[in-house]
Length: 111
Length: 119
Image (cartoon, rainbow over all chains, first blue to last red; front, side, top):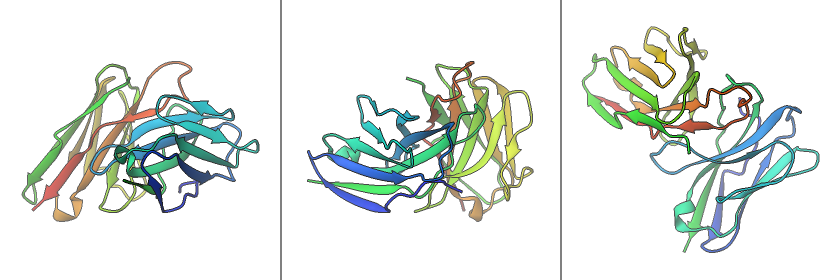
């Protein structure tokens, strides 16, 4: 079972920042927080991951609370192509451990 | 970045046919590959974990004789759906992680999926 809780859907105006929340209150000390997204009829796309520090890459920023019980994925300037289902996943730090997907958040970017 | 290629992208076949799906890591070696299945409007469900040179580990409820997995090299894993029936129609997605010491927190990379339709 997925160990994260996300809102089922969100809307965001094109050009604005999209802030996607995720609760992972039972996260263990060695579990990373991963974010993926899935555009319709495609495989999931890796976005970003982190352990406890905030992370930023060319796609997004990941803000993890100090107690690590929740995080927020930020898409700084959402475009229509960012419309997708976004999955927040926690995974133990072990090579053979797979990602377990929850239901994710369906983000709709509106023109 | 790491690329996972999956083939074919779409298959339509008659009931009773066996279908093979290939998953390749194009620019990295993958000791472990994962197979997922996704039904319409649902999330991805893990079917099995495939380890190079050894037997796959199947999730509860997934028939190992129905879904044959072979991981013969560090860049190729195959999933064969044997004697497929309409209820096997689904979106099958493979995933791989870089096989590198100390890379256990590296992300999994996914193929673009195979849409299987059994008539």
